[in-house]
Amino acid sequence: MGRRYLDTQVPSEGAVCLVQGMLCRAGIPTFKAPAFRAVYDLIAVNPNTKNSATIQVKSRFQTDCDRSFVVNKFGADFFVFVFLNMGNWYSREPYVDIREPEFYIVPKAEVFYQTH
Image (cartoon, rainbow, N blue to C red; front, side, top):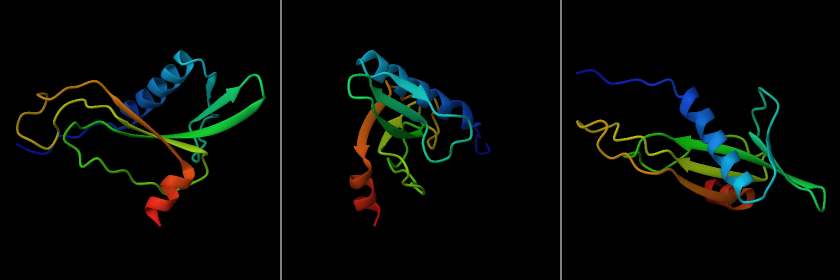
């Protein structure tokens, strides 16, 4: 049996929409960044102070992944690491371990510190 492939654009966009929905649900107005903006995916706004923060969303769809991400650009204020947990991908039983998505919000300084 050969290796399975998945178009990662669909889970990636789904992760961005999940994060946007969770932030809006928490009372933080959040908007998608203009298309083809490689540095950040979302813009969160505080309507009282008129301050904004940019957010880059990184996602993994496999439940059995190594829990790591590649970060090449540090232009966003915050990073949200999303584990979609869509099932095991590297084992013989592909859709066994499907779970709820997990979100981790990390400031840019912490991500930069961990990678350098």
